Amino acid sequence: MSNIYTVSDFTKYLKSLFDKDPKLVSVAIRGELSNFKCHYSGHCYFTLKDAGSQIKGVMFKSRAQFLKFEPRDGLKVVVFGQVTIFERDGQYQLYADQLIPDGLGELSIAFNQLKEKLAAAGLFEESRKRPLPLLPRAVGLVTSPSGAALRDIITVANRRHPGLCLILFPVQVQGLEAPGQIVQAIQAFNRLANVDVIIAGRGGGSIEELWAFNDEKVVRAIAESVIPVVSAVGHQTDYTLADFAADRRAATPSQAAELVVPDVNELKRYIHTLQTMLENNIRTYLKDRRQVLQQLRDNKVFLQPEKLLADKKQLTDLYTERLGQAMQKIIVAKQHVLKIHTEKLAVLNPLAVLARGYSLVRTPAGQVVTGAGQVIAGQRLEIVLRQGRLDVDVVRVKEEKNG
Image (tube, rainbow, N blue to C red; front, side, top):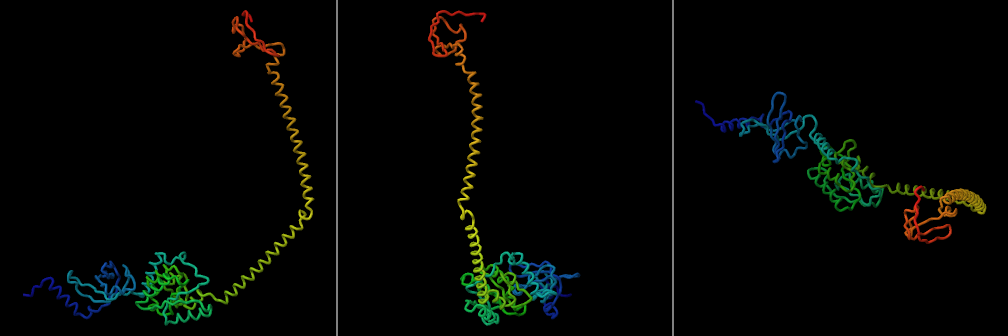
């Protein structure tokens, strides 16, 4: 009778067979990534599949931390590693040591992914970029102290503006420590505020050698810098991400120096041109003012001012005469209206009635008496005549019924 194994023992036996097979210890498998997840621990889990099958895979943090690009579902890759049994689940699994894109290079994919991410964050917007100072008092240099880039910048600066202050913050420009040093240099210049513009760069090289200037921390430090930054990585056709974030991009360190450092001779010529233009403008202005002044002096107002006054006097007399005539017409019209109103008042004046022999009888209280029935015998009345008044006592009251 054959031996009876426990599940664990049999799984371990199978695992030992996998671990002894040289084809499984070191494999390279091409496929498409699916269900890719990066655990908070740093381990990455995925499925590698093609049209006919699939295999589970894992890349531990010790290997995943060196990935230059961000693995995504649907990306075709080649995975190098070992295939063995995962004892707990009893299934075979691919343990990845290296993961590279199938087709495009790893750095090319990493470059495009990070460029897309930082562009979405607004780090490459033209609106946030600042102009370079016209006359910098000091220029900060972030580059290798032993590289050709530094020599090129110094040579161009001395030719264009001898004596301009150049302050070097020495850094490594390639390798694992380069990004951190470049970030530290840019932040130090911003903290000290001892320069007006920064040149950050290096000489040419391969994409791997230039990769420090594609590092996300470096790109963000350039974008966050208060001091304008010129990216000067020595590559004519290709761009680094630092170029997109910088306020200006120079194809070479020498060109960066020409952008930043003003040419003294050109400045002198420019100042001389401005001086000549200013003098010419002043002469033209004075000439024009003299002509205006001469025209004013030749004006009859100054040559024969009495004529101007004579004309004004004549106009004054004319207007005075017109005003008098207008006022006379108004007075005549008003007098006519007054006469009409006076005649109307005369007709309505009660004194005019009294003048014809009539009189007005009133009680002491001032009530006008119009009929005998309003008074009684012995009552005192007042009679108003055209001239004077009479106080009388009523002796007898006699009413007439027929009016």
